[in-house]
Amino acid sequence: MKQELICINCPMGCNMEVEYDEKNIISVKGNTCKNGVKYAEKEVFNPERIVTTTVSISGASVPLLPVKTLGGIPKELCKKVVEAASAIQVCAPVRVGDIIIKNILDTGINLVASRSLDKA
Ligand code: SF4
Image (tube, rainbow, N blue to C red; front, top):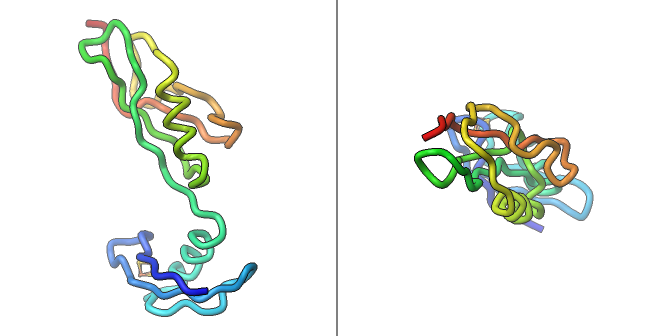
């Protein structure tokens, strides 16, 4: 199988062509450094994303608090992370970095506040 990827490990953004079978990377073309191979392996077999979304907040001057995961979430769980965040409400004040949902979906990753919001 073949897949085209853009490595996002650095601003070079190398366009890569990855050939792989069910278990292994066979070849990577277009990478400028070996980090591209590591990125390709992860992206093909275990893709993860940082999830950014919002949760409802009461008592602040705005109704939504921006939040993000403090690490990569398996791609297939990203939608469920957004759903879990949309199902809760927090109360002001909140400080940037506060844990909003600990170990979200048993991923070992915390969902944290991306900004501070004081009481209105
Ligand atoms: S392959 Fe290397 S140089 Fe190219 S984007 Fe990835 S990390 Fe940067």
